[in-house]
Image (cartoon, rainbow, N blue to C red; front, top):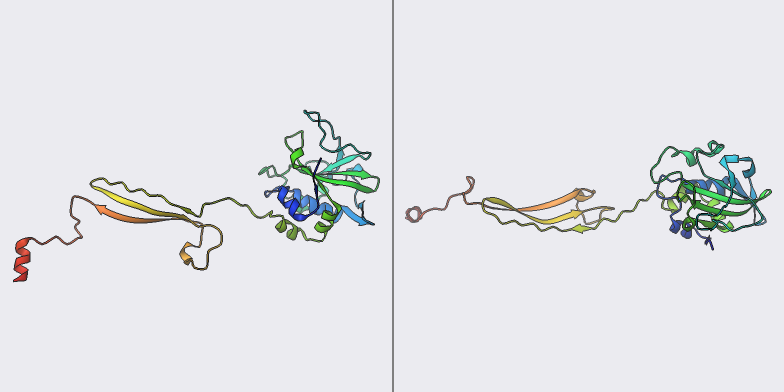
Length: 246
């Protein structure tokens, strides 16, 4: 049975429409704001999916290779929208289709599927393609009327920020320590005492020099050679020290 999402946090946890530049979250914000209205808690359609508005087209809900259907059988037809290459998709706002020609992160993989009872939406689902022909049942969710209402109250930017659309999180260890102290004659010995990776916002007690994402390596040089350095003072011999005392 498909999960019904009622809260913004639930939608965010599904990672639908992420990471950027996937367009599913923008598509959902457009749908909630411009393609549906509410009358007596019913969802009135502000477009005509059966006529192909905005790239809507009939969704067959056929059996997959395992003998399962993506959505439950009901008495109303399903229509799907979100393929930016479908006839009529050019009617979608620019903010939805702006990454049409970007292949990064399968940017054209997200869809909205609705069931339609004449002028009314019966159910609303979000999903994504598993491959070119099939949708992913593990990434398919029903969107409740309450959640659509919450989205309608938000601006596009507020919604995307709330969903973490602009945030790409990659774990970076706060400290990577490497100790490498070769001891060989006539060789400069380097003591790699610390290799620090700084990322994110700097702490208040950090110096300005390390408020960046650069790799910082601190080196302690222990120069041990058989030949005395020309820059170092020579040790005085016995007679030199004796004469100095005198």
